[in-house]
Every structure is written in C-alpha cells, then in structure tokens.
Length: 119
Image 1 (cartoon, helix red, strand yellow):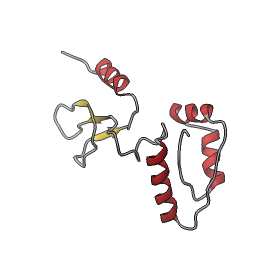
Image 2 (cartoon, rainbow, N blue to C red):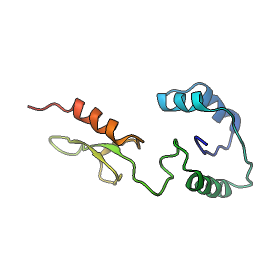
Image 3 (tube, helix red, strand yellow):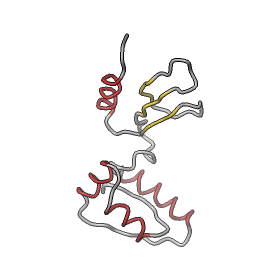
C-alpha cells in the first residue's frame, strides 16, 4: 500500500493523479499497480477510516497522518530582519513559512545546506 486518501468526487481526484503537478504525485502514480475504493456514508466516517488505515499500514506517501515519527519540514522565518532557513520536526503557529513534510531527512538537510549562503 502506497497511499490512503479520501475524496468526495472520485473522478476529480483520479483526474488530478493522472495529470500530476508535482514530482511526489508522479512517483506515486508510477509505482501504483491498482486502486481500491471503500465507500463510506459520511465525511466523518471517511476521516476515521483513513486515519485507521494509515496507522495500520504506514503507507509511504501518507506522511502527515502517521503518528510514530515526526518528519522534517523546512522552516523559513519571515518575521525577522535576517530570516533563517532551518530543518524542524514540528510546525508551529509562529508566522514562519513551512514546507513539507518530507520522508528523507538527510536529503532535506543537504538541500537546505546547499542553498544557505555564508558570508
């Protein structure tokens, strides 16, 4: 299992996957061999089922719902005279811009270090 997701309109959701706008989605589609659907009666039921399936199966592309690890984010402080770029494991409501989560912490650190200019 690569990914668990919910959709109110399955046709629109599949259309988005078949014409991906980002490389992560393109890789997901490339690796997928089949699609399984489970119909639920309510959005709440769908959310509970999604959460349970992610925790049970730990699909690679469901980073946000996993609860056993904290995945890295890139944080850019924008409310400072000299903004900082750093790798963090928690998103806070501090006015900073966050990008992620990412599954490969080493790659994230290398990208951040490569793009920081030192005086």
